[in-house]
Image 1 (cartoon, helix red, strand yellow):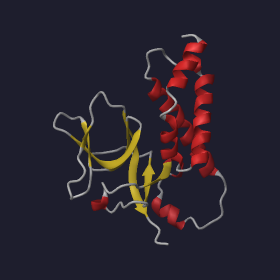
Image 2 (spheres, rainbow, N blue to C red):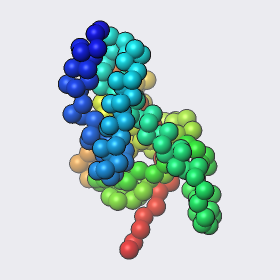
Image 3 (cartoon, rainbow, N blue to C red):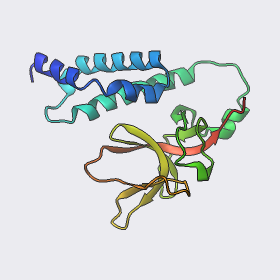
Length: 188
């Protein structure tokens, strides 16, 4: 693939990056920086792109890796405060991050909007675990289950019936990002 063709392919597939970046960073300026860094790295690594590969998945992977690496760098910076709550909530400092809960699909397990979920990427997800998953570029927190045929299924925890289970099919771009190990919320 020529450079102009690759540049056009990247340009035609950038519109979905900003919402994904905002989901990761929760800040407009940080999201813009993340998109810019993703595009820079994609263009710099053009030779690593295999023609026919899903370009969106390739760009998502670049963005996710940049975000995780930046998070790890920031978490290693020296801070001065009482680590007691961190030691309670976090098992693996390098593999743990927080996600802000949106929506009501997991209220029956105590995850309310604006709560912070503690996600540990070092843990292997098992059936029954609450997981942070990415489905076609969209994040969701649900309980991991399996259908009779062994394929993954994500279950909501809301007894109102307003949320349906998500059956994962082979056509979906699906990945478990980590296991939710806890949560916390602020009152003021």
